[in-house]
Length: 174
Image 1 (spheres, helix red, strand yellow):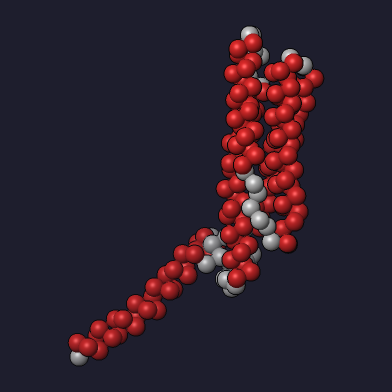
Image 2: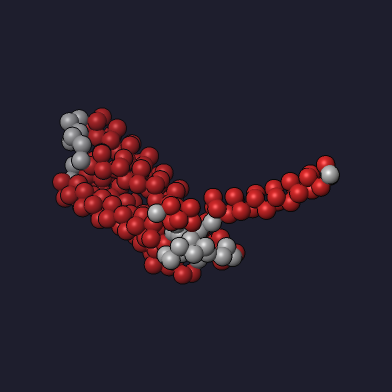
């Protein structure tokens, strides 16, 4: 009798654990139906998660550049050098932030990611030109580039959100 209870409890546990894990982690399509997790879909999910982290890191660099570009103008050469050093550090960090390798079907998102990163890099270059030559045209170009880069990054983040499957537990609660 005791053995039967133990076996029955083990069988129930073997059914409940996968169902619980599936409920907590399974993605659903737009109709609320669970999506089959094939290697293809897992690769997509992994890319979208990595792309989200990448976009957040690029956003932080962009905020640093925006703060410097829209902050007070340097009043001395040493202040210009300090600001140029901040821009250089942000540009160096940006150079290390390579977008994750994307599946072929996400080529448009990848191009937008590259565009955002390249535009931030151009803004950093223009800021360095401004601090090196006190060229107001370079500052204006840097500020405009930062605006365009922020728009491209918003497109990337919106694309990631739209392409990510919601979790079934979230869909089913609504």
